[in-house]
Amino acid sequence: MELTITAIKNELELTGIDKLPDIINKYRADERTGVVKLLDKFTKKHEGYVKEIQRTFQMQTYERKYQDYQAICGIDEVGRGPLAGPVVAAAVILPKDCNILYINDSKQLTEKKREELYDQIMEQAVAVGVGSIPPARIDEINILQATYEAMRQAIGNLSVKPDILLNDAVTIPQVELKQVPIIKGDAKSISIAAASIIAKVTRDRLMTAYDKIFLEYGFASNKGYGAKEHIEAIKTIGPSPIHRLSFLKKFIAE
Image (cartoon, rainbow, N blue to C red; front, side, top):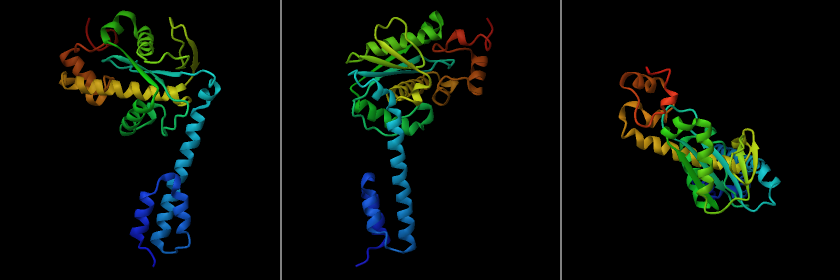
């Protein structure tokens, strides 16, 4: 008895993406237009899955290069440019057989996808450390030094000591570990990309919480960056306790 198109659709939807080719081939001889369209849709879905596996494999190039090191740690930061809030760094040690797909530079991902990946990384990582340096400290030592401090803090908060650090473009001072600075590392190393996701989600959640305290600045939407409405609020009512005063000199009078 010929299955209905709805039944075939349900079977395809309930099949694991890695097993889709078997089900697609099963119905290849069915010439009904609805079935042909379904098979085309799920064929494209599987092709996208295969491409993502290949992209993820490419993202593990540096992890394979340094595979003789046991605990490979990716380091990245977020929040160097905002007018308010902390700079946040994350350190992530992924398992050697990490199979999380869609990890990428956090800026290339939607908020929903970052949140999904955050949970997966936190669940599967060997260790995760986060560092956060507040605005007053940024004003005191400058943003570059504050970024290094956040990175050192993140490394120190790891439950497992790393054997090597893969860093996004920088060499962190005062760290006695082998470091590999990688230009645009959050797009080239799965470990650094994972760290960028953890740092981004952590900071975004914090700025959203600050939005409930400092209502006028729109922190939930701008995350402390210099959006037009944010700058107008600074000019109108002045800075909040979480603004970086050293960043505001062109917006407020001395």
